Image (cartoon, rainbow, N blue to C red; front, side, top):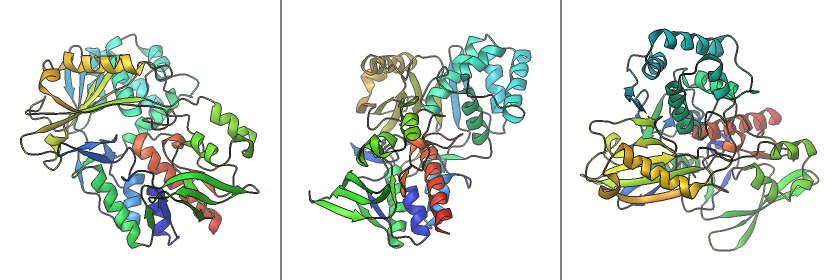
Length: 423
């Protein structure tokens, strides 16, 4: 949608094709017992440098957000740590985890070197990087929770360079928030602004084939909302189905240059995620309107209480909670067992929740609709060897970006390429 918004802002003729009745993919919501339950995204970047904000601004769409910047709590075995509102949170996290000011200062010095002097290469993981400088398990547990919750994969799976590029990006005045009336309302606002600029949005319309002739894209064949096949001719096609699916829709690997295909198969792991949303008559955490990350667990990684942030998310007196779990090994997950453990660890951290809660969603996201199509640092380029064919989405995340922001940033990159070639 961000790519379509940017192209609409450039007065291009745009058709947005969406298989679902709902827009936004992982940045949408569904109504469950009068609660607005996210389909994935919770913390959405909203600062002026955000590619999401820029896409909204391009078409004059308002982002109706509640700012959550800095409202983070981290839990380890020995207690909870809230980020201070006046800064210094990273050092505070280290001292809290390590329990020793001298050790924390020493590790902070190494982190600052990695951020501002020598960024580690991607030849080692971020766990390897920490192992160079500390044997403190608590601080590694802290960053394991941080990585799994924010990046979707684990400390032993994230390239060290990518970790620090993200950390640097996220510390540059970045602001995060939650959509006041749910992600679906946010996407509807963007869609309306695009339509006012002449864009066509086709819901319940799935792409069956990307048409390619002589190495150039010529359009798509879709199955429309009436169940009929329809051909849409176009000089440009931007696909958000994931790089692998894009290749299949375009006719298969034989149409693509060899180096692209080999990269497609290199480190081609998706990032599964486990999602549960539930409603209670009370909030699990009193007077907490932020985000909580867990470093005292194996699978349960994140909890938010959207009803404590926005009164428009659930009926009065009902408290919607959203929790996430991640596999301990994203390359070889056992999602059934690990989902059971996610729920068990939720209960261990909040005794009684399994009896009190009414569960609205219990989902395991993998395969064609994972949390991310490719791991951080392993994204495909947005352009392809087929002229006019581009990928956008988290399968081609620009370096230093993750999740929803990475999808929007890939759109920014693809549109910049298109406009540069048009000049």
